[in-house]
Length: 110
Length: 110
DNA sequence: AAGCAATTGACAATAATTGTCAAGTGTACG
DNA sequence: CGTACACTTGACAATTATTGTCAATTGCTT
Image 1 (cartoon, chains in turn yellow, orange, blue, purple):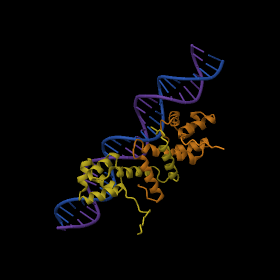
Image 2: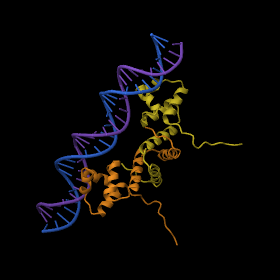
Image 3: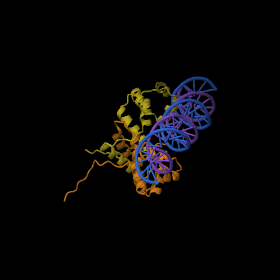
Image 4: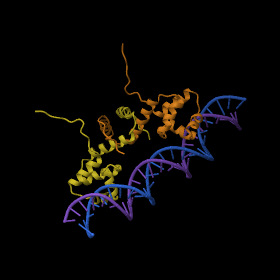
């Protein structure tokens, strides 16, 4: 038996996850956006990655769409991190330092 | 022969690095802040970690104080990352995902 | 072509960041 | 003492980024 693992498989963005699940449930943008108290335009943009959701919206979306909240949050946060270091040649090194800081319980800057 | 490595040694913040070097050079806040075209108040706050510097200020500070620009930037960026995930229980997991995304050349969100 | 969901872009509202200024602390020194 | 100087603090102003609305448009599908 052979297992093929594709390490280069693209991980889905929060937007893709949300759209996929919404469509699987047969829900329309307005069904969800009304619960978030935002216009459909924003949700559309969030799903297509043109806008970032807020932390609160992600949490509510997980509830509404019955998505695993932890997983969704992790991806959401990682996107925020990537956004922060985009175009930075030293991004990866900064990530490593950040990890170390968390591991050794550094106090975070206010 | 025994080597003692202190893994728990706190890494210096950008503010500390800047203040230490400025003092070692015997320079006053106003000498530096004028070159950055900001008030001494801000530089004071940056050095004490009460305010974040801008990316541009960090770069200029490295030049003015003859600090290694790469190292300073890495620490600066890591602080921005930590700020982004502060209080998040899933912060470390998000960091790992972000790393993986960079490694496998994910496109960053606009 | 009419109806409906989704998309787009201009722009308004809001919130976060970055800055100034003036008053306040602390300290060194005549 | 008291004054000179570096730095700190906090209120608030200016600027920039984020988050939102709305109306027009696209692209089905019937």
